[in-house]
Length: 351
Length: 115
View 1: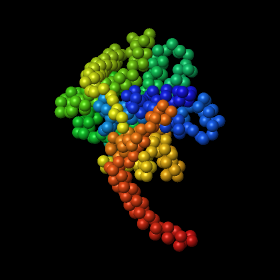
View 2: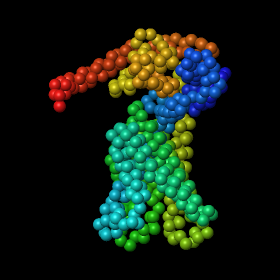
View 3: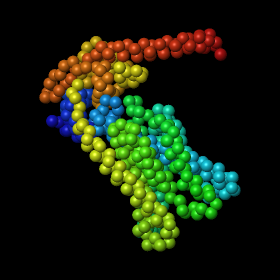
View 4: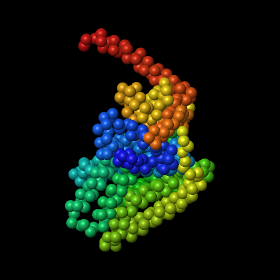
């Protein structure tokens, strides 16, 4: 076996092993034929120092993703996994879109009440870019509802650019500051990168809405859920409501997970076993991502010496959110994985 | 049976198999030739397309040969595949004809008008 073949076989390990058993040798044969140039010297050299091209690597990564997030002809376990990814991605896009609507309503509100800061020097260009990025989740949701996942991917990709800029800025601020042992600052930086990672996962996860997969349908309960999601931040506009009470924007994620879980419990009885499993795993994934993006800075806050300076209600509120989401995520993950184990093992019939 | 329009890659894979059964690499080469180099698929992409077409019943395994210890599978176009390909070719042809009908007067005007 030549080094080039070894490298390609290592790359193929990304594919599910049952698939590799059926297709592996054939793919290796096709690849080795495709890299030949009918020049014995060049071919001999390529066999030793050659690597699969980036295009080849991407095609294998894409195939590995498509196989695991399968459509109509996928093995049942991968069909369920694909459904779970679509559930989670759709929920996150909805959460982002709801947050964008709130942002727009908030801007109009502050402008109406005379507290609009858009014209002031304090309102940095970064804030504008960040707002535009957030609003881009609205066309993302619309494209997804109109069964245009590639268009949705483009909008979602653009929406992550300001998130990347924010993560870089947080990192830069940390490196400039003298507070290298500032847990809050460290927590913010780690969270900023995890928030970016979650958004990048969503952009990639949108690929699970392939042509064979069922698309996002704007069902009435979904629209009602989106309206309920707006309630927490809408409370900020109630006179006398202290802004710090709900200052942490992640509440919409936790509420989204809780609402999704409630919807599955209430309406899931009428669904097929596969649909319920997809929903359970989708909710579990959503909870995991909600916790991942928020946990570092919360830990940072709590680890800081000056914890006592934080309002007690704020700390309690955040900790309760995290605990509830952890409990929901764990329960749904256990239920989902139990159901997955009952499905037949992944196999591929030879063609 | 495919009801949606075929992807360009699926269309070319089926087209390459009209004359004779081919193995993976021969399909890749034929696709590049048929499309004048426009369609250049990678191995991972090709097998994704072959899997879908096979699951749809549009292609079938013709035979398997062992070459240097590795399986080399030859695929052929199924009857369903021929029908699906003919239908998609007719659809594309009708689209092209419609566009050409509407473009013809425009080009006539452009060529007739020196400005």
